[in-house]
Amino acid sequence: MREVFDFSFTLNRHQFSIVNTLKDHKCKINSFRAPSAPTKPAMQSWRKRLFNTILALNPRHPDALHLLGMLKLQRGNPAAALDPLSKASEIQPRNWVLLADLAQALFALQQFTQANAAFRAAAKLNRDNPELQIGAANCLALQGNFAGAEYALRKIARRFPATASVWFNLAN
Image (cartoon, rainbow, N blue to C red):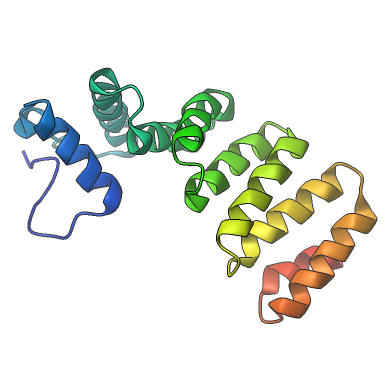
Protein backbone atom coordinates (compact mmCIF):
# COMPACT_ATOMS: atom_id res chain seq x y z
CA MET A 1 0.00 0.00 0.00
CA ARG A 2 1.16 3.51 -0.70
CA GLU A 3 1.11 6.26 1.86
CA VAL A 4 -1.27 9.19 1.73
CA PHE A 5 1.36 11.80 1.15
CA ASP A 6 4.40 11.16 -1.01
CA PHE A 7 6.98 13.65 0.25
CA SER A 8 9.04 13.26 -2.95
CA PHE A 9 6.87 15.87 -4.63
CA THR A 10 5.98 19.38 -3.66
CA LEU A 11 2.89 19.52 -1.50
CA ASN A 12 0.18 21.94 -2.48
CA ARG A 13 -1.08 24.35 0.16
CA HIS A 14 -4.02 22.14 1.18
CA GLN A 15 -1.89 19.01 1.54
CA PHE A 16 0.79 20.87 3.49
CA SER A 17 -1.81 22.28 5.87
CA ILE A 18 -3.40 18.87 6.44
CA VAL A 19 -0.06 17.10 6.97
CA ASN A 20 0.96 19.72 9.53
CA THR A 21 -2.33 19.35 11.38
CA LEU A 22 -1.83 15.59 11.58
CA LYS A 23 1.75 16.08 12.79
CA ASP A 24 0.71 18.74 15.33
CA HIS A 25 -1.72 16.27 16.87
CA LYS A 26 0.83 13.44 16.73
CA CYS A 27 -1.29 11.35 14.37
CA LYS A 28 0.55 8.68 12.48
CA ILE A 29 0.50 9.66 8.84
CA ASN A 30 0.97 6.00 7.91
CA SER A 31 -2.42 5.22 9.45
CA PHE A 32 -4.02 7.21 6.65
CA ARG A 33 -3.21 4.95 3.76
CA ALA A 34 -4.94 5.44 0.46
CA PRO A 35 -6.95 2.48 -0.88
CA SER A 36 -4.79 -0.11 -2.65
CA ALA A 37 -7.18 -0.09 -5.64
CA PRO A 38 -7.95 3.63 -5.93
CA THR A 39 -11.39 3.67 -7.56
CA LYS A 40 -13.18 6.99 -7.49
CA PRO A 41 -15.70 5.95 -4.77
CA ALA A 42 -12.94 4.41 -2.66
CA MET A 43 -10.81 7.57 -2.92
CA GLN A 44 -13.80 9.79 -2.08
CA SER A 45 -14.58 7.68 0.96
CA TRP A 46 -10.94 7.80 2.05
CA ARG A 47 -10.76 11.58 1.56
CA LYS A 48 -13.95 12.07 3.56
CA ARG A 49 -12.46 10.01 6.44
CA LEU A 50 -9.26 12.05 6.31
CA PHE A 51 -11.06 15.42 6.28
CA ASN A 52 -13.39 14.35 9.11
CA THR A 53 -10.36 13.27 11.17
CA ILE A 54 -8.76 16.68 10.63
CA LEU A 55 -12.01 18.42 11.56
CA ALA A 56 -12.28 16.32 14.73
CA LEU A 57 -8.83 17.63 15.69
CA ASN A 58 -9.53 21.19 14.55
CA PRO A 59 -13.19 22.00 13.68
CA ARG A 60 -12.16 25.32 12.11
CA HIS A 61 -9.47 23.94 9.78
CA PRO A 62 -10.24 25.95 6.62
CA ASP A 63 -8.57 23.60 4.14
CA ALA A 64 -10.30 20.50 5.51
CA LEU A 65 -13.65 22.33 5.50
CA HIS A 66 -13.06 23.55 1.96
CA LEU A 67 -12.03 20.14 0.63
CA LEU A 68 -14.84 18.32 2.45
CA GLY A 69 -17.30 20.77 0.93
CA MET A 70 -15.84 20.22 -2.53
CA LEU A 71 -16.02 16.45 -2.07
CA LYS A 72 -19.72 16.73 -1.23
CA LEU A 73 -20.28 19.06 -4.18
CA GLN A 74 -18.51 16.62 -6.52
CA ARG A 75 -20.71 13.84 -5.20
CA GLY A 76 -23.71 15.86 -6.34
CA ASN A 77 -24.80 17.03 -2.90
CA PRO A 78 -24.59 20.85 -2.94
CA ALA A 79 -26.84 21.14 0.13
CA ALA A 80 -24.35 19.15 2.22
CA ALA A 81 -21.45 21.10 0.69
CA LEU A 82 -22.88 24.45 1.71
CA ASP A 83 -22.16 24.18 5.45
CA PRO A 84 -18.43 23.35 5.28
CA LEU A 85 -17.87 25.81 2.42
CA SER A 86 -19.68 28.58 4.31
CA LYS A 87 -17.68 27.90 7.47
CA ALA A 88 -14.42 27.89 5.53
CA SER A 89 -15.31 31.17 3.79
CA GLU A 90 -15.99 32.79 7.17
CA ILE A 91 -12.50 31.75 8.29
CA GLN A 92 -10.84 32.79 5.00
CA PRO A 93 -13.01 35.57 3.53
CA ARG A 94 -10.27 36.64 1.10
CA ASN A 95 -9.78 33.23 -0.52
CA TRP A 96 -11.18 33.70 -4.02
CA VAL A 97 -11.03 29.98 -4.87
CA LEU A 98 -13.08 29.14 -1.79
CA LEU A 99 -15.60 31.88 -2.59
CA ALA A 100 -15.91 30.58 -6.17
CA ASP A 101 -16.57 27.06 -4.87
CA LEU A 102 -19.16 28.41 -2.43
CA ALA A 103 -20.77 30.27 -5.34
CA GLN A 104 -20.93 27.02 -7.33
CA ALA A 105 -22.72 25.27 -4.45
CA LEU A 106 -25.19 28.14 -4.08
CA PHE A 107 -25.73 28.18 -7.85
CA ALA A 108 -26.46 24.43 -7.86
CA LEU A 109 -29.03 25.04 -5.09
CA GLN A 110 -30.59 27.80 -7.24
CA GLN A 111 -29.84 30.41 -4.58
CA PHE A 112 -28.90 32.89 -7.27
CA THR A 113 -28.84 36.06 -5.14
CA GLN A 114 -26.31 34.55 -2.73
CA ALA A 115 -24.39 32.87 -5.58
CA ASN A 116 -24.14 36.23 -7.36
CA ALA A 117 -22.72 37.84 -4.21
CA ALA A 118 -20.16 35.03 -3.79
CA PHE A 119 -19.14 35.17 -7.47
CA ARG A 120 -18.75 38.95 -7.24
CA ALA A 121 -16.69 38.72 -4.05
CA ALA A 122 -14.41 36.14 -5.70
CA ALA A 123 -14.15 38.28 -8.85
CA LYS A 124 -13.20 41.30 -6.76
CA LEU A 125 -10.30 39.30 -5.30
CA ASN A 126 -9.25 37.89 -8.68
CA ARG A 127 -10.02 40.50 -11.32
CA ASP A 128 -8.20 38.56 -14.04
CA ASN A 129 -10.61 35.61 -14.02
CA PRO A 130 -13.50 36.24 -16.42
CA GLU A 131 -15.30 33.01 -15.41
CA LEU A 132 -16.10 34.46 -11.98
CA GLN A 133 -17.66 37.52 -13.58
CA ILE A 134 -19.56 35.31 -16.05
CA GLY A 135 -20.92 33.30 -13.11
CA ALA A 136 -22.25 36.49 -11.53
CA ALA A 137 -23.81 37.55 -14.84
CA ASN A 138 -25.47 34.16 -15.24
CA CYS A 139 -26.99 34.55 -11.78
CA LEU A 140 -28.55 37.83 -12.92
CA ALA A 141 -30.00 36.14 -16.00
CA LEU A 142 -31.45 33.27 -13.96
CA GLN A 143 -33.10 35.83 -11.67
CA GLY A 144 -34.80 37.34 -14.71
CA ASN A 145 -32.53 40.41 -14.92
CA PHE A 146 -31.65 39.88 -18.58
CA ALA A 147 -30.68 43.50 -19.20
CA GLY A 148 -28.30 43.48 -16.24
CA ALA A 149 -26.82 40.15 -17.37
CA GLU A 150 -26.32 41.40 -20.92
CA TYR A 151 -24.70 44.61 -19.69
CA ALA A 152 -22.33 42.63 -17.45
CA LEU A 153 -21.47 40.16 -20.22
CA ARG A 154 -20.74 42.95 -22.73
CA LYS A 155 -18.47 44.59 -20.17
CA ILE A 156 -16.67 41.26 -19.64
CA ALA A 157 -16.39 40.75 -23.42
CA ARG A 158 -14.69 44.15 -23.82
CA ARG A 159 -12.15 43.28 -21.14
CA PHE A 160 -11.63 39.64 -22.17
CA PRO A 161 -12.38 39.46 -25.91
CA ALA A 162 -10.60 36.11 -26.38
CA THR A 163 -12.76 34.31 -23.80
CA ALA A 164 -15.13 32.07 -25.74
CA SER A 165 -17.52 31.43 -22.84
CA VAL A 166 -18.44 35.12 -22.58
CA TRP A 167 -19.45 35.18 -26.25
CA PHE A 168 -21.35 31.90 -25.84
CA ASN A 169 -23.29 33.38 -22.93
CA LEU A 170 -24.01 36.56 -24.84
CA ALA A 171 -25.39 34.53 -27.73
CA ASN A 172 -27.84 32.80 -25.41
